[in-house]
Image (cartoon, rainbow, N blue to C red):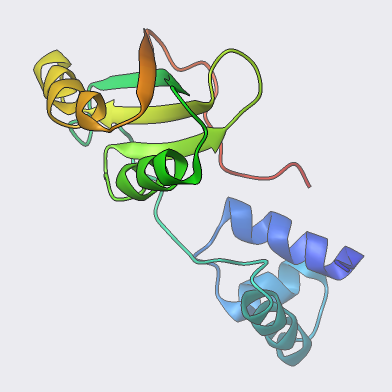
Length: 151
């Protein structure tokens, strides 16, 4: 169970993952040793899965983003397992969700441009066995993008 001190630590680390242990301890009102122990426990339990830089997509050369709605022909384990195995290997796929509704999966994909997106579809998505359809929604403007949980 996550305690109030853990929530304060997680909220601060989501805002500033580069904070030193001293800065973090001061911010959350703990001793440095207690803070260090709690951070290590959160890491070891898998609550904190890692640390990363947040990169501006367009400034890094990925001008196009799309949401793909994917439906499978059949839900046999063979087709599902192959779809999941293939999708998880592609760097263009930032997120993949199994969902309810019209589509079985929703993918968030980023690429350099429309030509790269067309190649992604032709050379990858349309070659995965068992796909009934792939529908694309090209993102015109990102209104809100966050990876921080609402502590």
